[in-house]
Image 1 (cartoon, rainbow, N blue to C red):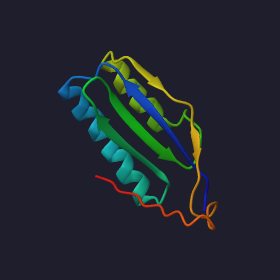
Image 2: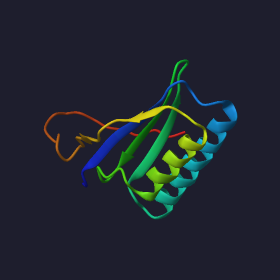
Image 3: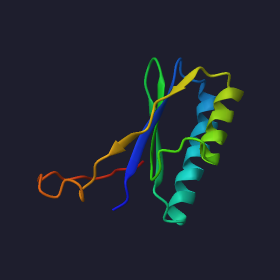
Image 4: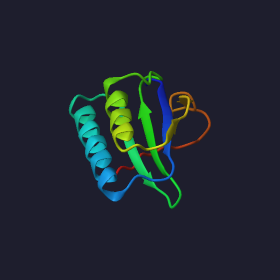
Length: 108
């Protein structure tokens, strides 16, 4: 199993609804492309009252990929104030084989 990494964008205050539509569209397209190419990459939009979070899970800690540039370009176009966290390694089943832990993923 490959090492996975997680990081997030925090956008505060949340972008307007029409801006969220564009971000959601971008993330949906990227999720579909990653799935089609069997590439470990997924993003989830998390809406909160005071901020919007974009959680990204990828096979690399690199944050300078074209998808990051497109997302950051869209956030800049919306004049959104955002911060990106440092990537954090995610432990998976292969690393926790004896722990009895189970993992599942849910999208949508």
